[in-house]
Amino acid sequence: MCSVIVAHHDEHLTAPQILAYAEAEHGGGVDRATVYRTLEVFEQAGVLRHMHIGHGPTVYHLAEDNLHQHLVCAECGRTVDIGIDDVDHLLSDITKRTGFVPNLDHFALGGLCADCAAHVSSYEETEE
Image (tube, rainbow, N blue to C red):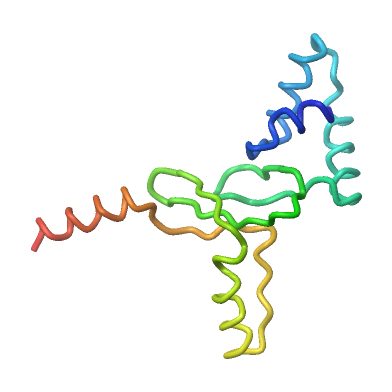
């Protein structure tokens, strides 16, 4: 399973996807419960992080030094990774104004990607 996670480190894999890759790599016979327990152990050890992207299942990726945030388009489902520095000022502003310390480690930011936003804008303009 380690080789699967390393080989697909640039993807956001679900547990079933990790299981499927592991079975393909080992010719089947990989226990589903073992995959879930191993993911939990890797996460507790700080090797993996999980995230909820949109309305889909939990995804996993390596816990990297270069933390990033996920932007998910509510229209087309496209996911964009951005550096944590790009949202730090937003989080700091929220904390300064409210005293609340947001944690975006496990959740993505939803909205519209540039293409979908342009499509919505052009649609709204034709309606007027």
